[in-house]
Length: 75
Image 1 (tube, rainbow, N blue to C red):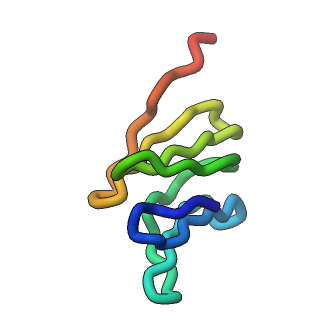
Image 2 (cartoon, rainbow, N blue to C red):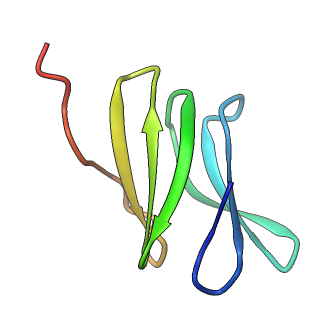
Image 3 (cartoon, helix red, strand yellow):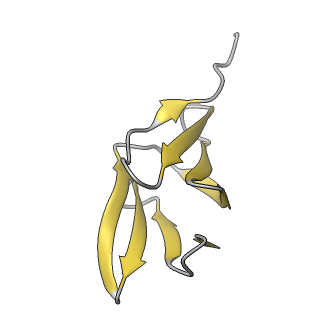
């Protein structure tokens, strides 16, 4: 769980493979199609999570939700 600058709560659900933001108590999908996420952090306007199933750290801009891989496993 992490909070953005506006105090909105962001949570991951590895069963549904999504990261959600709670807007006025309603869940909004920020990113989907992820593997098992562990850990969330918000820095500025971006949310960061680690997909341990696929061994990738993701960055998800809070405004667009367009995720990108921060690094690849070289193996």
